[in-house]
Length: 114
Length: 113
Image (cartoon, rainbow over all chains, first blue to last red; front, side, top):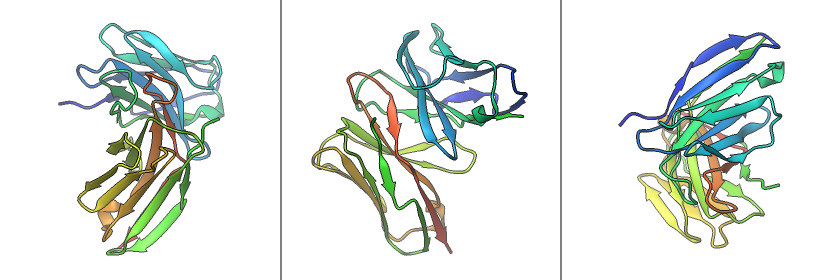
């Protein structure tokens, strides 16, 4: 079956702009999480959604937001982009929201802020 | 703050050698996952361990979850060039029903031919 699909794969934005990234989870998966990966900080949790509700939020400023739709697809938005927001943004999906769940990652969206 | 420390940070070995990567924390995790990530790609799940003391084998890879569920190890036997990549451990399930993962610092493995 198809894996987690993220779009766009690569994008370049200017400081101060905003960006929206999209994620389609594996069919049937209702849990979607987002992560930011940078060389300096590694992989850091952004937020988790389950059945359109935000379940958890990481330690990121309010410029980072997300949502999940009724078909489980998710989007994340970063407003007022800063140079430090340049990173690989990863989406992950899982069947349920439970401990020990198997979590699958997409290939990510590479964001460069100039 | 939960932290997962991986060691070593970098590892360069010859094809055919054995290696072990460690993942340690002061926190208890209800599950631990190991991923391999190649440049420009997302992490690919290798294994999930959920029971303290559990050992799982996948061909040349052996994964162990510590008895106290605070640490884990990944052992690769007879490494191949295709094993090259970033290995990440990730602890999950802390605090209840959540898919939030706490990722380790990563181990970059290079297997030379």
